[in-house]
Image (cartoon, rainbow, N blue to C red; front, side):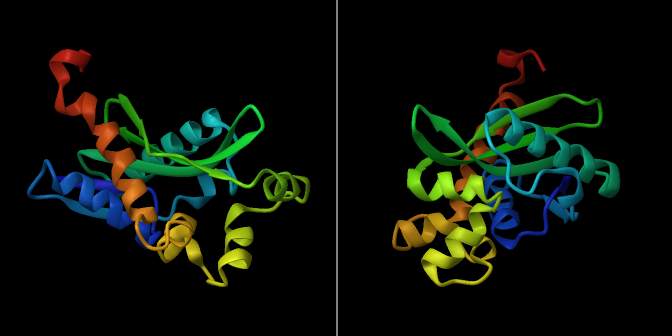
Amino acid sequence: MIVAVGTKNPAKVEGIRKGFSKYYSDTELRPVDASEVAKAQPRGLEEMVAGATARAKFALSKAGGVLGVGVEAGIFTIGDVYFDNQFAAIVDPSGRVSLGHSAGYSLPSEAMNALFENESELERWAEKVSGIDEIGDKGGLVKFLTKGEMSRADLTEQCVLTALIPRLNQGVYGL
């Protein structure tokens, strides 16, 4: 099965590969740079879903395949608490989209308030805190914060697995 992937980020590509490999033995991933179709720093669940969906559709239009996958990380709030989360969108050529998201983890409020006031990206703050350049390609902030126990690839795998649920249970979901 050919799967168009709306990212060239190694951690996200690995997570997508791991998620699909649990159910499909013969999957070829075709990564496409889809950064032009999504916001640099999505804020809120709607922006994350929109970014993931745009990436999936763009990848499918550029690389072809049976499915397109987009993954978008971003920040949302519950009350005064900021969370980092990832959404996956899986789209087929008919335009049907299935969605899933990863575990989320809290971020320090004071730092996030400053980040948004300065219109900066979480990755820049994460690089500063961790001392790791291009941390998003190297396991992500979650790997640093969990002391290596969870990585960005793990979060990507989670959101891909949950986005696959309707496709694995088409009778239940009416697909």
